[in-house]
Length: 82
Image (cartoon, rainbow, N blue to C red; front, side, top):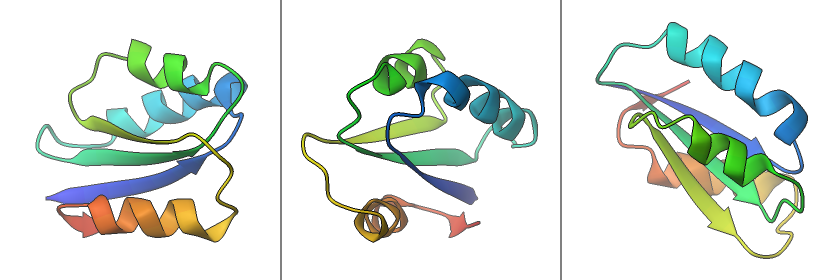
């Protein structure tokens, strides 16, 4: 199993295109783990609207910085990470 880890912060404008690209390259048993760093835009809504079961969204309600969201996504990954 492959896990793709992402960190997001106010990336709603771009995240749908990113997810579509990544999902098109993944098998049905892969996952995308997204750690959102307290986005104030529609990032979370865009991720949730994809409706793809391979996506797991980890939410933070406050800014945690640049490094911690990636670390959090890696910790939550269940497969080999990329």
